[in-house]
Length: 122
Image (spheres, rainbow, N blue to C red):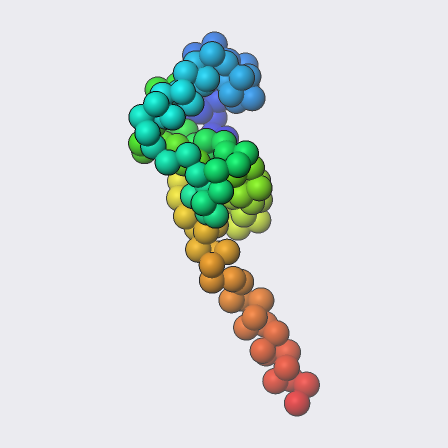
């Protein structure tokens, strides 16, 4: 999380992002998302079980635009997006889409490496 985001959370009175996610404000944001009739199914797999809202960006934290800043993910894919971000040094913005494309298209770099190894052994 960027220093500006941490500063914004402190400005709002939250010592950490975890505390923010446990706040009445975040609960109201989630309820507003559901009340707006926006999709409540995982963006990756379509499951409607164990869905959480993933921040696409932290630019408007505390004043989220529910249509632009949040995307529903099942807990499994939410962990996957964050693991992908860490492994690929992907910024938060667009990470859920990049992760979905990575799942769909696989890992071409590893496949290319395997092909090169096969050629060496021939």
